[in-house]
Image (cartoon, rainbow over all chains, first blue to last red; front, side, top):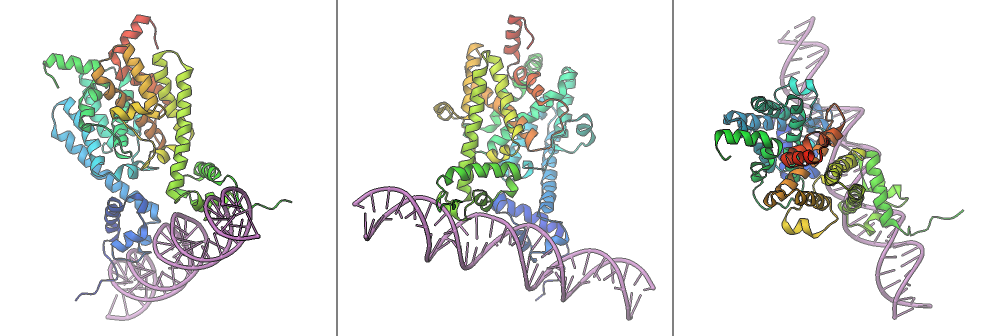
Length: 210
Length: 210
DNA sequence: ATACTATCTTTACACTGTCAATATTTATTT
DNA sequence: AAATAAATATTGACAGTGTAAAGATAGTAT
């Protein structure tokens, strides 16, 4: 019969994971530091050895979730060869991720969290943010279809805003949309709306119906 | 020297307005029932005579803010004659409203609040929700340019998602976008993206550059 | 005048984040 | 190996929170 050791050993990471678990179980409103500490079998003030305050723990949790998010997006990119497919499924993955974890959206995008950095340097520097993954896929595609260079950044922003907006509407609200949300992107909207002429031309060239 | 009367007289409305003021002053994180009560010069339990709990007061506040929001949108519609102008400026007003009151976005769209109801009945029934105002303007326009009827609802959703997404990115994040956000809609994105061919044709007809 | 109802205050309680003081273990230095 | 320092955890305290219960006050209806 082993006694619980005084030192936890891996409390920092355990707090982050327990925090995310609690968030998914009870939602952001009922999230509390003391509950997380209890979940880890540790006193209510123990977290202060690893995080300055509640906010700091939540920031670490956001970082963790964002990493998962980026990994899922990366996997989608590697899964498809066709340019247009990549763009479609990136959008779908973006939405699906937050549909599957309903608590994550307001958690990540409330107040601080994932940043949308569309400055020339910001979006180019790191290759492992949600935005930069979109940027690479979209710019590759736009390059291939000779999309007007001066329009590319604004179009990228619009694409992300569209996907982000759909996600927001689907997750933070009880959106009443009859049908599969995946059709929102597949039908006319995503590509046909933003790349209407370019996509149409490409389709005709290949003689296919997407 | 008049004594403060035992009964406030108009506490319900005062609580709502003081609550909104507190929200704007201190943000949602530092919002509390007791502070609102203090702001009204009333004991901390007085609000419970008018609202079941904190959540109920916040719902009433949301209702109040949403009304303001709808009024601003309505005013925009009445201000312009041209179809395309109405659509552009509706989008701009949407964004501006939340830029000017940074606290409102996460307040209204976190958890509950404004609903995006895109069911056939939902969006048709009431004419005084943010969505329905967009719907009227957009459908009028689409009717005029003979936009394919079966695409209209999805296109409307995309429009709102786009505007909503831009707003989300601009308000909940420290978005780094160099330039006026109004250009995001004016340039190519809003109309050119969603109505690319139709708008272009209309432009050419009138021989104007929007 | 009486009873009734709505509104407000007071008191109390459990829960929260955070701090200070203390205890325990591990790491570092001597 | 012993002494010291540093890291990590506990305990106890405090102010602030939402909310419930009981009582006080005032207006309204009978």
